[in-house]
Length: 145
Image 1 (cartoon, helix red, strand yellow):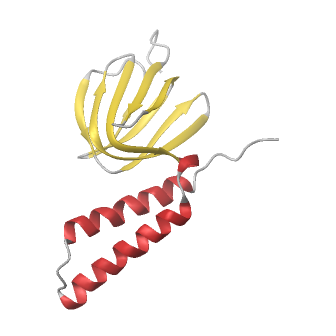
Image 2 (tube, rainbow, N blue to C red):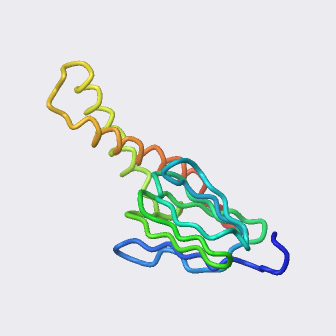
């Protein structure tokens, strides 16, 4: 941790809601050009977000979200992310995601075998989102007794 910086105020916002607003020790996020990490005292920058797993640490505990596209503003003591979608691991409906994954795989299969009139980019993006959501859902925190 950078000397004297303490924690980072971290906010994740979607068009629908404020997903997170808390002080954290570390953030790992999917930038459009690859993952980036943030610790307190980080050099300021703006970047675009991709589709991926966002992780943040409070103490020794990591928490995870699935996010899709948006923007991040990083300041030495505050990080704000505006994302198209953001779901905490505990919020993800695994059965719904499995159905979305199957639909995307079926569309891509139709496209590859018959050249069907399928929007390849849209089907690929849907599959990518489903896979990330499943990955994040697998990291749900187990309540301690």
